[in-house]
Amino acid sequence: MSGADKIWEVTGGSNQGGILVRQGKNTTSAQLDQRLATGALVRELAMENGRLQYELASGTGPRTGWVSTTLKDKPLLRLLGAGGADKLANASAMDGDIPVPAILRPHRDVAPTFLPCGHLEVFKPTLNQKKFKESCAQRLPGQFYGLSLPATPEDFASEEFGAKWLTEAMQKAGTLPKSNSVAQMVNWRRFEGGGSGPKVLFQVEYAVDDASLDKTLFAKFPWTLEENEQQKIVEQGQGKFGDNWGGEINFYRFISSHVSFPVPKFYFGDLNRASHQAIIINAAVPWPEADKTEYKPYEVLPPCGKCEDYVLKDPNEYYFAIVRRQGTLAALGKTNKLGPDVAKVQWYNYSPRNDVFCCMAMPGHEVAMRKFIEETAPHIFPEDMRASSFLDKFVVQLPAIMRSQEDIAKYIYQDEAYIGFQHQNGNTDNAYFYRRPNGELDCGLLDWGSFAQMSFASAFQGSFVSCLAEMLAEYDDRLVCAWADAYHSNGGPPIDVEELLLQYRMVTAVSIYGCIASVRLLGVPEVKATIWDKVQSWNDDLIRKNFGLKFTVSMMYNRALLWKLRGDTYWTSFQSWLNRGKVGPAKAAEAAAAAERHAELLKLSVKDLKDEITAAGLSAAGAAEKEDLVRLVERARA
Image (cartoon, rainbow, N blue to C red):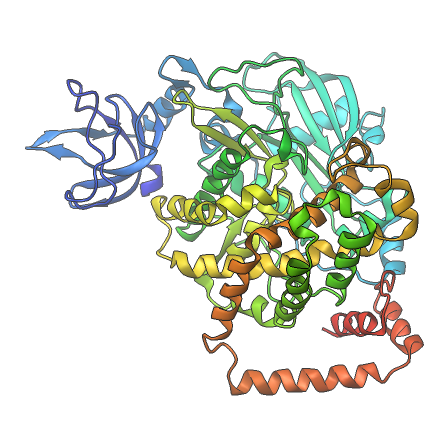
């Protein structure tokens, strides 16, 4: 039995309210304020000389720490045998006398037992748009289970699919017994939330009632070309965000049953790489009614819309909950506790060349942003952001950092200690929150698109890219440290937190430049007349009601404001990084060769540049200057 499978029960400390817990394995390390209650069940993380490092599975006490298994030859804990898993499954449904719903329990305690299936080949982008569109016209079976796949929510509810297809799909996955079936689908409702495609919330009735089966389910689909051509090309053709659909299905099918925190139960998922079809079906999160205002422990709190953290009372609380989950996940990956299929799945290979957040951006965004702040929509920005003293630095510092973008991307991927499994988009709209009996805010994570190993520093951007600048400016260092605390307390091998902070700041600076790129479209005269002359703030109702506009405006505004609030710190860190000797003779020669190639490309005509961009399947839309076209050609050749 591995350590992760060993369950211990606390038997000592009944007269003292539980047993002592210390921060470290030594008995002289700091004692934690709370005791581990008698009767609590814990998982073994490590054992050294009678000292147990544990993770709380049920009961009350510190979430993790070190305890002695005996005191003066008297046992304080007992190792449960083969029945430990069953006892835990029953016990973890309660926290004291408070019931804990399955969707808020550690998923490894409640995950279904899947039937065996194969693995997908690695995702490869299709940059040629003509070939991509031709492939999308195909209708091919799913590669995991061989079933025809509905292309849209309407297909899913049709007679061709419906309850009969859902029965077969869930039975093939192993999430519905052969002795049962879906009798009918009811209360079907299509909706659109997020950018990756349409969703469906629906209820099912089973032929045989089974308390272990969820009756309210959620399904998601990628866009068809007819519904949203641009998004489908960017997401599934170019792979701008990685292996979005394959990453999520691989997470739920092979990884979710090993994680120690809540995620929605997975019922079925499949895709076809060649035709770019996909479907994912999960248990629906039990969101509260809109008029509910009071919440008990273990009741799911209202959802937070993307880029709408301003509706939260203390948004920092929510991000601390998220980074604790992310740190835990990273540790589980580093300590080989994410199951036997981790090594078999062909994960998308994030690297300096294709990192989502530390990526190349066309030059000139800083000039366009300054014009936008000073002329197009000055009234939506704070007075100190409109000051020349800030804008003069803004247009110098960010381009200087972007000239080192390639080096920064290589830097954050040069040490494997700072690379691991992460939720690539772990922000407040991809989580569901609840409070524990002690008032602590906690969360489960959903929407696992593009799951893979990536730079930890880059993964922070996925969590923070849509948050409020004021919150992040105040808490970013503490959030990174909270991630590291969760990582180390769950057994992750040691990493240097100061180094992690430096990497985080470097990627944040690059990410800020990428996020202000939308100003090129938002600053044109037509948008000024229809939007900026009519709104009073960056989150005005006119902006909020349009998801795409809300998303781009929020990121542009808050990332620019973040530079105002934290730019001096990030700039100082950048200077420190430059002075660490990262650029040696070999690097200087490489940079000189790249500059020579760049100069040669600038000699080409605009037509030749555009022809090469088109031949590579990319678009020259938005490339206002010849320099922009050269950057796109360099990207295509890379």
